[in-house]
Length: 610
Image (cartoon, rainbow, N blue to C red; front, side, top):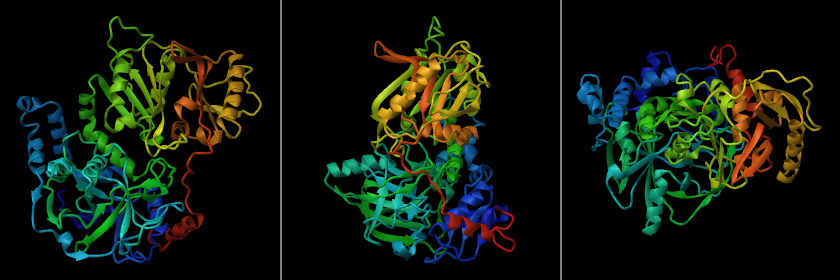
């Protein structure tokens, strides 16, 4: 359905029975986020809060809380955008099947941004502290804007086609920010706005930034799309909305006419302030760090403005549906960009960036089944491509070994990989490299290591689901069990330091080396709570790949370095215990949890929903 505002989206969902109003007084401090989490977990409707404390604006959450609702919001334009992406990958397809791609031409027409004087968002002004001051987790450093569209232009080129629209963290209270005058801006170094900021600093000039909130849902999705270089997000927003992105300017700032709110500000050059902590999408807090901040110039809003927000935390959350939709839209673009790659899964349960599962062709002749070659070429290309470059673990298998293997079926993929991998040759480390800013598995921000595990050829082993007769563990290790065939999870002593960890894991290695029958158990993962880590495969993925740094936390029986290549025999050991420098996992405030449960009692607004 084509919509020109967030209010039209609300009306559409009401007619579909996909939205409810909550008119009882609700506190934006923890309570509104806890309500959203519980309703999301119950696969409930979108929520319009009309009586928020300390603000006159209604707030909307769980808009994209189910994938089915997300599809409803973006259809039928979604089919047109898919066609446009396919055409970009194969322009000749239009000549072969013009009827099939007629929708792509419509999307292309809507991709052109239009300048217009009718900007309802410039009707009214407010102050930052009049906005819903939403704090999601007890340890958050303040209130945040949780679905912002942050716009900036290239200082070297004023064209809107050289602009960037991204979703970056905006802190609007707390820390050392001057109330109503300063707000925090957290972006990762590789993001588009980072390039604009760098150029502005080189030119010794401030960078003007506009923050849009609300508007057509397509504008929100556009802000998180991993678009190819040279494709502006505002063009994609128009194509997906089925309506050209309308804009104007005010006091030198770019304004989205259809936004519900627009904050304009100047990125202060060569100055930072502490930002965070923030409960992030990995399921842990991002700690407090120095980041740039904006000097607020104005806060605009349209009549009837609605303040949309989301809640992030350990996946799956609402943003998981964004990720699924993005993958659906860009699937052909990824495989066309990465020639030879047939499928990619950025694993949501592992926090997306920490773990990639990939299938690709291994076509070198003669086909050396015991030593993947082309797979490493593909792996290097992946680690040099956009957001895929943030991967910490990249597990890649030969397409030819099982063309029907589904990379989105994580347990089956792991079984396939572990049946074939040769730990003496198939592990490839990148040490002392960059890491995702949000990954705290190392003691230094933005720095860590990566591991490529590449497997091809026939099965080397059959994976077991039982321990061999006489199996035992050394003192300090206990409660072994299976997360899946061949994947053993066991509990170890508390991690205190790497010297002590090396001593502990070496004892485990020597003990396992002297036991027989372990070839069918190629992976051992040491954790703090074995029962939790193997309760579900999602738990196994989250614990294993978020609490380990490959260069520091991977060990193996009979490990050795040969011509600078590290290898070992089975089993491989991953130390996924919590380290002292890890950030804290997210936990709800117990009193707020109980308060929300009372809203679900008979007569309450959430009765029958959670």
